[in-house]
Image (cartoon, rainbow, N blue to C red):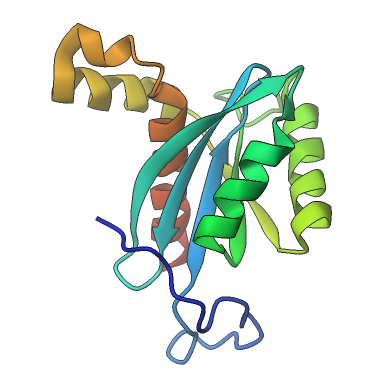
Length: 159
C-alpha cells in the first residue's frame, strides 16, 4: 500500500542518472469519454494502486475533482494510457487521448508520458474477477485498475 506523499523531492526531475534520481510519485490515467481511471504509484518500490474514476463528459474530465486528487498526491509525472490497435496503429480515440495528455501537462505544468495500453482493460477485468468474481466487475473499478496496470507497465519498461 502506498503512503500519502510528503512534500520533499516531488518536483525534482532534473537529474537523469538512474542511481541518483530522487523518488517520484507518478499518476496514471486510463482515458475514457465518460470516465477516466486514475492510479498512483512511486518509483522506490515500483508499486501502484488504483485510485478512483474521474467523471468525464465527451472526454473532458471533471477538472475540479481531478484538481483535488492531484493536490492530495502531488505527482511529479503523469502517465496516460495510449490506445493502439493490435498492429500498433492508432485507434479513433487515440487523438482524444493525446489531447487529454497535452491538457494535463499544460494545466499542471508536469511532464506527461504515454504508454501502450493494449489489453489493459481486459487484464483489469481478469484481475477484478479473480479478486471478487462477477460482483467485482459491476463496481466500475475497471478503469482505475487499468490505470494501475498502465503505470506498472510503464515503470517496468523504464527500469
